[in-house]
Image (cartoon, rainbow, N blue to C red; front, side):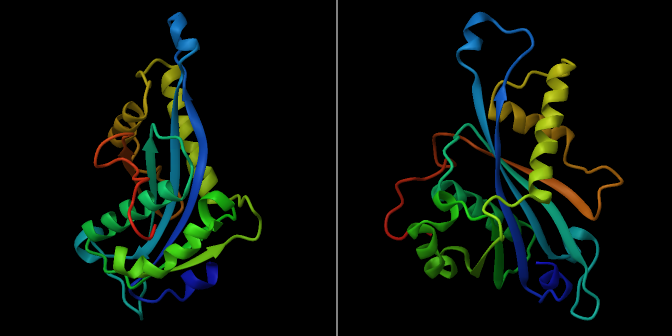
Length: 224
């Protein structure tokens, strides 16, 4: 991946994806029933690299003078099922975000670990054939050498959960659901610390368990 970013073609993007370990919404001052009904929150992490978009990033990027933007994208949900459909939902959100900032993607380079249910099932391998039709660009899938890769994506997820644990410990706010977590992080944690290496911003998405914005597990035809 380092070599790819050093020679990053225009119109390409890199997405490093990981399912972070789930978070349990535990409160300091619980009523008895909350001990037996703890809300579980899933957190999916994407490290996204793309060329700068002048209208959005206030700086440009060219082949001669490339300017690569790095962002951390987080998908927060009460839906804790980790499968190919939840990964597909993240792909949709990433595609929507890139469209929002007017970044035209010709090719997406995906990097993940080798966990079978999420990334190496027959459905996921078959999905590549219709990525152009579904997202408007081709996808090249890459797997890290180890089955559970440890890297920036793991640190980013741990950082989020540590932040939430701190505000609960200090009674700054109440986090009792995925939606509450999303609202707090979006309001307070989008801008990285000044010493964050080359990180422009954090972007947070909330995915409900029901409705049009939920993960679809009844898609007709190919599961892309």
